[in-house]
Image (tube, rainbow, N blue to C red; front, top):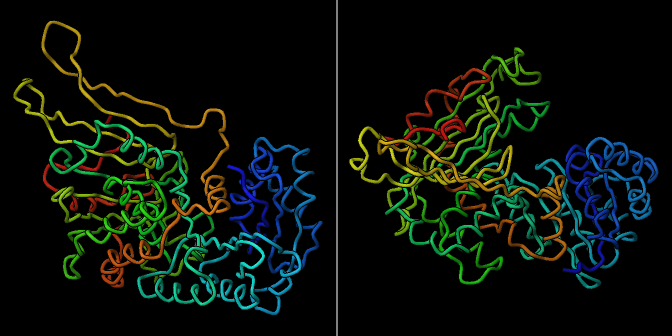
Length: 477
């Protein structure tokens, strides 16, 4: 699809998000000919000239873009300029002369500045669509709890209409997440078995080997539940559980996701321990090196209650999913780094095969470190005896020809085209916070359970599992 020419305005253009992820994605789209008429305006506090900003971008692209081409950069550089200022209307007014026609504003800012930026832009009329469309991209988190999310919505809506708002969750741009939809709805054999009659449990895991990596100012306020579960994993959860859509468009898809979230069984405030577990990494060994615990990380206050591991168990009270537990977990400094959605099907009658304790299949959508779909099945072991062995039917779904293509390219293109399918509507955000709010309130007291860096996480996570269930790991296949 051809995209109309537009100006991309990056607020927070000198920050870490822009240099590591956002601008490399913009550069690749331009270099591949997807956005030939793109104009870029960087906006930040630094008192730089356009030339200084361009030099800053070039240096970082040489580091973060493996296939960086000087020739492509010289062409894009001619369309890049810089404006210095803060988020007050007096300074933001300087963007008016350089932003004409269609414009996409990307808030690559700390979350506490989202409302100031949106209000400031709106106060000087930059949201006005008389000369072309105007859209605003906001990075997560969308608030810190239900109340703050609702307050953020009110402030955003002071000047911006909901169709102009694009709440970005880069997990929704991942190839495997989108393949979940295609695999489920494009294959007729999936629908008859995608329900509680056949599925025993669903696990969604995002395990990281990294620690804070200097992000203590943000992370100690957020923690694993806000940073990963409330947005990324909750979106995968909703997409896994939605009813088939009659027509593939943003409104249909997002409405179906909201219906799932509204059907989640509320977590009683006095029973949070039965549905949620938190942990915090202690000292340990990663990659053969000793690493400090969270409380020994630079900048972390000794009064911190922040969790670096969070796990929850959710039930969906509807016809399709009645009684099926959905387990979601994410943690830092784990033994392995991987992200996956794993669906376990119920066992067949094992008396057919003597000596076999478990004949349940797993369908696994792997997102990290590689992108592929695996089906764990069973076949006969060669020989005279009727014995079974595990076989894994696997398909690689990574982009072999576009290794450096990321979710950000997908989502930037979607926003430029006005396609909100892979962006969050506010009621999705609100319902996700509503589910997790009892946990956040309960965790205002007490401390997380400590687990060693390089381990599988806190021992307490096992108490969430229903009888016969266990947390799987990549080695289980």
